[in-house]
Image 1 (cartoon, rainbow, N blue to C red):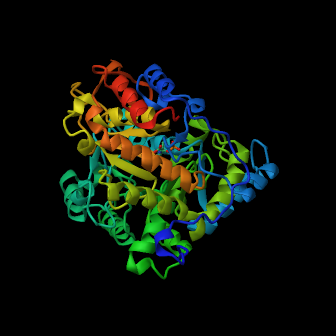
Image 2: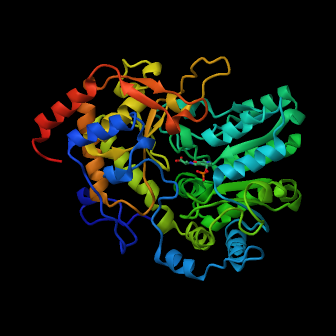
Image 3: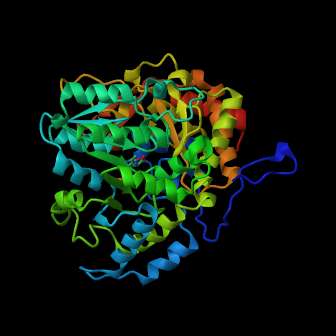
Length: 482
Ligand code: F0G
């Protein structure tokens, strides 16, 4: 629980760890930043890490490792089959989720591929609170369709609803009935809804989803990649969870969902991916795809040292002093911005802070990509790299028309145990400056648009010369500062 300060005005989230290995950062002059973002096609994925001061692109695979994780890596067992390392991963999963059956995959999306291969057929539907890019891409690739059933409140940018990732249960029941349960490949709950602001799902809602699935005989799948943040929110926002231990929450979920999978780049502060289930029937149905796509059943494409770090990281995701760090730093940044009037998704969720770009640049239409424009502007303003989570991150419809995102967000991810509070304050300061100068931000247009997952490698250019004007204004306001 947060440590209380003597002087309330000094209250800040307190790190419950100290930094023992450091990485040097660079902050380039603003003129250089302009050059770098233009060379990167205004796509923050194409920036080089050496040119970035705060890398807030993602919380995936970039979390701070603990001393115990680093130490564990030296005992990794490299044997191709029957590795002791895999047994330690299984033991950690048994402790955290209580499940016995474990399939390894090289990362979360590989688990999604296996799930889709096993259960998605053309003409079938996968029902979700909200899609995630890679989960959807694997399903549609195999001819399946995704139906999103998040409660409408989840799409309102600013509310005080504590669980904006919740399923609309009425709609879920109605949709299964209308489609027919045999047409539903599975129901997927994303615990910590990535694309709508890392918003959590309540325990009550998740259990109700599994009840409906059992009633209709439909498979239930939990994407637990962001579950550690979600468990923090359950503990702090949901009365029935207050007196449950974190382990009781993880176990309650695992007892009810047929299948759990996760990206260990998030859950477990490491790298890799896992599928786990109580019932061997499910892992048996998916097993054949592991050696085909990933690697043998005791490593699944993962590097053994990452597996050791994952095992230790999983135990750490039971520890509230560790799992509170991400959400508390995010809440701090969100409050700083909100108090200043910057439109951010509220309440603060997991994963990162999310700028609501439709309100920052209300005059930019979806097809001038407001969220991407704000991302490019923020790199120019502060050497800060966020990620577009708006229309660029959508896929075009089969007829080639643009699918406009429900929310045009610029995500500022908060890798866990990585940034200090002064860096978070710097980030808030530069965003505030950008907000005060938002009238300078203009649109972007494609110069190269890939067909699949275009947000990864697409390239864009500014419409007009607004980026040069932004640099000029920066020099006026900050003098010769970096
Ligand atoms: N599910 C969720 C909820 C995710 O956020 C991610 C990844 C995945 C699955 C896929 O896992 O990356 O290990 O293949 N999210 C990252 C992000 C990429 O930056 O939001 P992966």
